[in-house]
Length: 175
Image 1 (cartoon, one colour):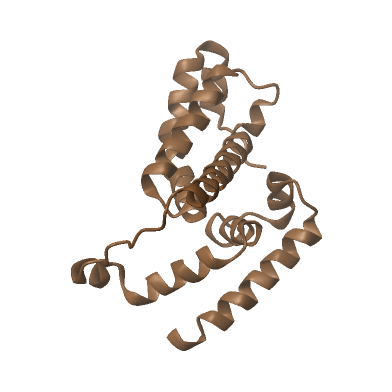
Image 2 (tube, one colour; image 1 turned 90 degrees about the vertical axis):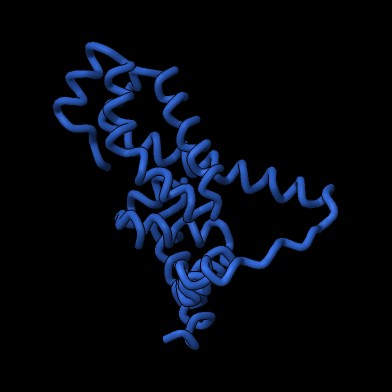
């Protein structure tokens, strides 16, 4: 588990606003990237991370100050899941619409391979996608992934293995 650094720990004792602000500056970008990889929506990801920090501030100080980053990651993952669930339910009640095609410029900027990888990743089951993002994007050990997601370590390993096999199969043409 990643712990907060000494200066932040000292700030935590003195001033919750200063401590949470320091954590925000240090970890905001990484948490937004995590949420974007789970939800594929930058604006919603920023909202989710903002809510996580707001809740952290409300509950400051945590019982275990060393677990602050784990708390934030778990909050971001859980809130991202809630947003995805709400969207799925909303789609049941809203008639489908045709999304506009991306412009040629955005295709060039993003690159076809990156788009294919993103699509393949988004097509994976939520749990599998979360395990892969935590393992290969945040480079977390399986023990920490299991703890964050509330699953066993062997389940995290098997999700990663199945997810990689699926991605390899779906992306074999772009190599």
